[in-house]
Length: 129
Image 1 (cartoon, helix red, strand yellow):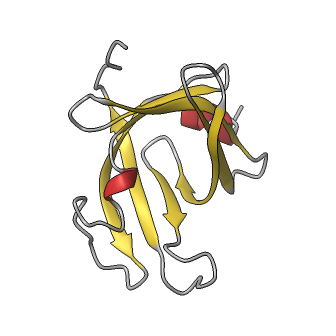
Image 2 (tube, one colour):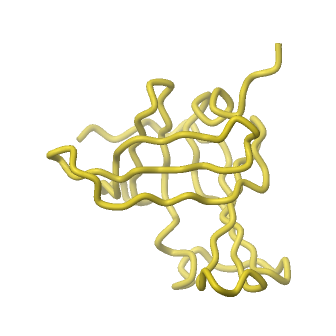
């Protein structure tokens, strides 16, 4: 039986390994348009997640979900008291066991300018809090 989009996302740890702009050109991960989205992501099957910067420093944690059609991933970032800091929904462009890519828009009003944030599976162990 084919895994659900949520099962695919929770099946491995993910590392940001690339980014492309709306012209399909590679963008460096240090580019200010994408640098905030770079790191390691751990989506747990219980609906919680933790994200870390590439130096293993904590980035955020909270709850996550993927729409049943696999087209949208939503995260709800929370502080250590469990209070919501923000909610972010992104369009998933690729979700397979080999790649998880989502699209971000610097301006919500202009859908012609975007960046695709590309993640691939990693064996990187989740840092201890």
